Image (cartoon, rainbow, N blue to C red; front, side, top):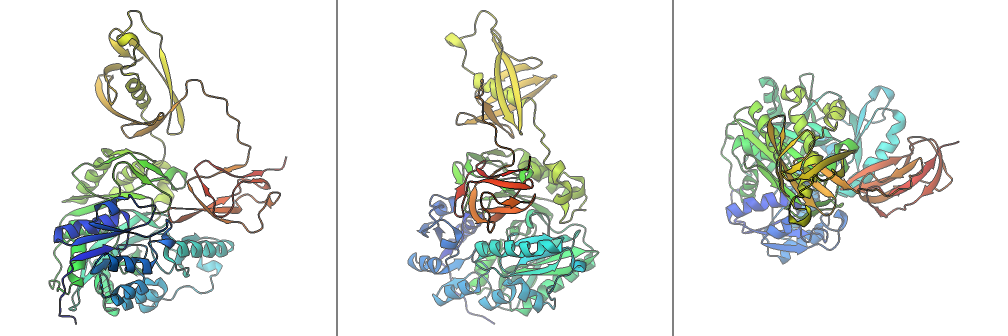
Length: 621
């Protein structure tokens, strides 16, 4: 056991975005100087701005920058850091990186490299817990889950329900895992359809103390990546909680674990099935912090300095729920979105962890998560209500996000009753992404635009002709009409109480409703929680796209084209034609119909924008 202590004065975070900013916040509280590393794409990112010192990693892709252990260690040494915190993702579960940090004479804020080696590979972790992965998969094994052995965050994972899909799933998972973690090892395990994803937070010191610091439920997931998390996991029998704690402590002790970690389980039919141990801080750690009163990053640093933990963890208090706010469109297969984040303002009643500020650009190279919003309250019902209300009242101007999906999820009967499982979005995505446009938002946009536009600096003495404006909202076109009169602006069926450039108040059936309006550029308007695009009064005639046209659903890079695919190739409906990579996820583009490939507009390595024409498949006449 370690008894000596050290004192950390300068800490480098080998990461970016939200987690780097979150670690820096605790460092400021502890009086520790901070060092950021950044890619060229992140030169003006928030984490690089808030750190005391920032070091450039030349390049833009993760493989050239944040996954380069040699460059990160060199940056720490050159900046005078005496410790390195890996955050999560990237190199956080890379034993060789941990060794390189230690070999450079720096303090590693994490478990011993040997513990990372034993648990960071999910295959070796299962062997350690006495669980063997599937070997030769047969029909009776289906459905199965193809899973990356390294890393996390849902990358390198595929559900397979037919044997003839297994080969492609293995290939796709390997490619995605290699891109995200630098390790293409994958394995296959049984896939439980209606289980709950439950995990135990572990905190261990160098003096033999291991805390099971409560449970979390992370069942609401998309593409095997968590969306909403909470602590403690609701509606678990006391005996099962004790079993989860015992298994988690056993896993930690089996590898002489040190620091913060998470042991993950799938709970089904009242039984706990071990999944993996994450040898790092989790994205969802704030909910544990809220109910325990423990700053996990501060404890990670103290443990790395050699200080002991108290013998027992603090008691839990209340309930906490976290929602991950993503720049993505859930209605379009979760397609990631890019662009300028013009405004992000969250009510003070909740905690906000983010790597962005107003005016920052959301690019294609990294994860699509904008922020984590966390609510804590005495009961689960109060925490749910508090978080849903805060998200509804968040000002969010920029690319499309999953905000409406989060609010709908938090208020869904299945979730409020704690009857959710990992198949929640498979069952409810359509209803949760159904458009719910406010029919008065286009009118508010038009009235705000009309503010101060009257001729001759005042209202006309004669009644004006109706003014017409057209907007695109939630995929539908809306036309609104209003008039300038001596009494002000009027609109059929609605009394205009106030019309300013930024605020419109309408009397609708005797109720005054406020509409906050913000405009960016010539055609993008945000009205409360709705995004509108102003359409030209006299639209130009557009050439129609050829039937069978395949358009890019998101910005990204073409990373693969199907072998042998060329103009003139015969393809089958649903056949994979090419793959796009955006924000560390790969997306398959398939043939919309059986027919002939008549156009192929892209090649491997080419970057494309949303709506770009990729290919055309012509069906037989």
